[in-house]
Image (tube, rainbow, N blue to C red; front, side, top):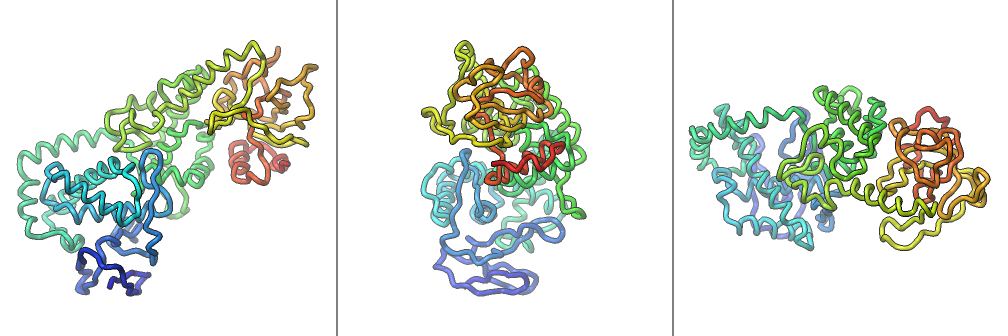
Length: 467
């Protein structure tokens, strides 16, 4: 029998037999909690996480977690999963033994227990999760040193599952000259980092899932962020957010503004000189230097830059490859469009029957959805522009606005005329634009429409009703 907390009430619930139970004391009142379902509450009133139990009565089928392409936990249960995993690590690996000294089979057993309880069917995430476990072990020991050893305190009131018999041994080890020398070097290294990330248990993967909520709030408060296109730069910027308790909105940490402004300027310069599409680096590398082994900024502290799924600058490389492939089509004056998911045959788009609001995407890499201008598509039955037949796969677009920072970006050869050589020249003109580089803005894409209006506040909202 275990107890779940619902506010100040305690509700009993019978579970399947478990390997063991752990008794935890809260004040003088003991209560039982199954070690595999004890988690940490999101935040206490003091703003720090504290020991608590599940706030919901989870069913057996709820014990399921998904992983993204980099094997980070994602989805609705990712935070409870990571809370459980952190506790499981602390309970499984005695605190007085250094992380490096545990035998391999102990880590294997941890993964098997994790797979069993959370219904994980494959070992795809095993390597990452065991790296995470070792990192959690090390961080927990550091926390014990900082919060307890250095202050002459004992942790057993808060961490009742720790064995007091080994505390003196732990204190002696962590106050030795050898450890203190290592600690000083680590402090010096940590002190060099002035760009602290503010992430939850699920890290950048969890942050990515909240982009549609957090980024618009930051854009509204800091309009200069509206020009940012690079996904990794956006993630890094969002990781510097802090929540204002008075306004209940997000703000950027004061010490991050200078670096973020440099990122914005650098991306704009890279777009203008074409290096943004070369696939060799990105704004983060330009501003902060190359990535170091074993971690990747705005991706993971446990995944090296060469191990990022698809390659760290893969999107930029795709841009470059498409630029090269389009060069071969310049003489023909037309570009076919390809299914971005399958690389398959030409897509058949439904006809546009009336003037329709749209976003115009950078045509040299459509999959990145980099919006360079906005306007209105004319009916696809209208195939004449400037006295000539519109190329196959292209549509006639009336350009109403150009996104700031995109003015000097190149356009396809078929789009160029005497007065149009780059994106900025298209303003208030009619151009032909590839249909696969068009985003329709209408009622069915309301979420995208909000982004459309947010990026272009000067436009009258009445022009975005769509077909």
